[in-house]
Image 1 (cartoon, protein in one colour):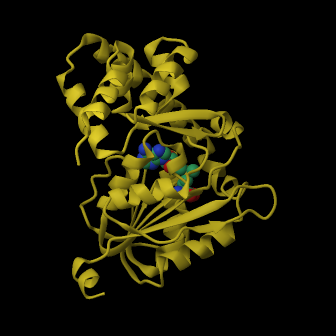
Image 2 (image 1 turned 135 degrees about the vertical axis):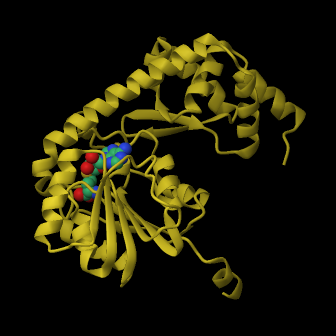
Amino acid sequence: MTLTADQTVEALRAAGEPTRLRVLSLLAAEELSVMELSRVLDQSQPRVSRHLKLMADAGLIERFPDGARVFYRLSHDAQARRLIDTVLDLLDDGEGEADHRRLDEVRKERAIDAARYFEQVAPQWDKMRSLYVCESAVEAAVERAAGPGPFQRVVDLGTGSGRMLTLFGKKAKMSVGLDLSQNMLNIARANVSKAGLDKVELRHGDIFSTRLPPASADLVIVHQVLHYLADPAAAVAEAARVVSDGGKLLIVDFAPHAFEHLREAHQHRRLGFADAEIREWLEEAGLTPSAPIALPPDTEGLTVHIWTGERVVQTARKTA
Ligand SMILES: C[S@@+](CC[C@H](N)C(=O)[O-])C[C@H]1O[C@@H](n2cnc3c(N)ncnc32)[C@H](O)[C@@H]1O
């Protein structure tokens, strides 16, 4: 598909301003809130919002509210993306580099705060996990969504204290738990050993670049991790890369909610995820999504959703 002349002119007009080009370049790196963009660009939020509205109206970027904040990302439309990529490829300006340096600083601050948080909460994590959800109901539903097993290799990304590893331990021939926090990994080691599991490997690593071989696990789990991440779509893509033919990726996280305090108090970056958003990420990563499972809270907590994506084997698809 191509754009009409009018659509092209409208899109170029919307992009044709220095601050807007800077915004496009920043959003090409990751989704950002108005507040973060305003900080990196050193411009007021109303001014940045005006630029964002123009570009959203022209279909160059997408707006998505998240609790009290509004985030933006580049459009998923293939033609809009081609136009943006072409424009950004032609750009060679020092201001853009300075913006990306400031974005790196914002990212580093975020990463330091999150790392400090997880190092601190590691000893209490097993108790904290159940504060907002009914843990036994979630675990039973996760086991049902995964299927009966046995599994050749389970990979738990952002394993924390290793709860998913112990849950699936006996059904897995071997498992890998990966986490950025050494304190969390130490607790996971103790929990795994207490559960008598000897085929579990705990690795220090980043969910964005796991260094795990492609198609190497028949069950990959991302349990209560996505809402901490700056680029959840990239994490889903990396998790999906590891799923073998016929294997599954299980994502367990919150449905959209309005518990704003979780950002400051517990380092949440996103207040839950919409089903359509996760579905799109799973499909983009080449997985076939199943209908999401919703687990509402007993009382005042949060609704947990389980999203499953399967790497359907091509030949099975043809004969089905
Ligand atoms: C809320 S805990 C969840 C732990 C576990 N999955 C559970 O549900 O009990 C989130 C975990 O993700 C880890 N984490 C955060 N960012 C990460 C990243 N970029 N790569 C790997 N692990 C990360 C944190 O260290 C923490 O252990």
